[in-house]
Length: 241
Image (cartoon, rainbow, N blue to C red; front, side):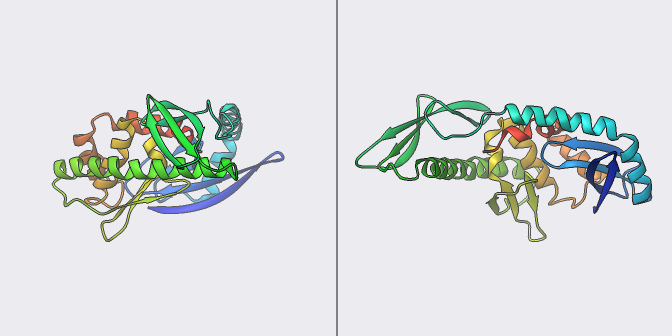
C-alpha cells in the first residue's frame, strides 16, 4: 500500500491528511478518525492535486466531524489514577482502589476492582499508572496468545511470535518474518474487537496487502468484520490512558 501526505487550507484552518493507495481499490473514500486523523482510501491514479481539491470540497464536513470528535475526547475523564476511577478491561469497567501497605506494593483484581497496594507516598500517580500498565501488558500477552493460537489453527497457520508494543496509531502489524505486534491497549476492548485485530493480522501472514483475497479469508473467519472494524474505528479512542 502506498501512503502519501498532504495539506489543505480552508480559510484560516489547515487540514492535514494522508492517502492510502491500493491498486485493488476502484473508489475514493474519506475518513475522519479519532486516532489516525483525516485520510483517504483511493486507487493509484488520482493525483495529490485532485485529492486535495476533494478534501477542500469536503472541508466543512471534515471540520465539523473533527469538532464532534474533539468534544467527545474532551468529555473523556481526565486520568488522575485515584480511588474511584474506572478503567476498561475486555470492554468492562473496573474501578480502581488504592490501598496503603507497609509490607507490599502490588496490583490485583478482586471483586471487580483494581486493588493497588502502595508502600510509599512518593510518586503515587506514576506508580499507580505503571502498575496498571504492567498488569494490562501481562494479561494482554496471555489473552492475545490464546486468541492467536485459536485462530491460527482455524487458518491453518503456524502459531506466530507475538510482541506487545505501544503503537500510537495502529492496533497491530506484522513483519516479513511472520512476527505480529499488538498494541497492548487493545486488551481494554471487548473480546469481539480483540478477535477482529487478531484475525486481521493473521490473515496478513497469508496476504500482505488488503486485496480481495485478504478480505475474503477474513470474512470466512469473522463474517461481520465490517461491523467490528467500524466499531473499533469509532470507539478506539476509549482504549487508552
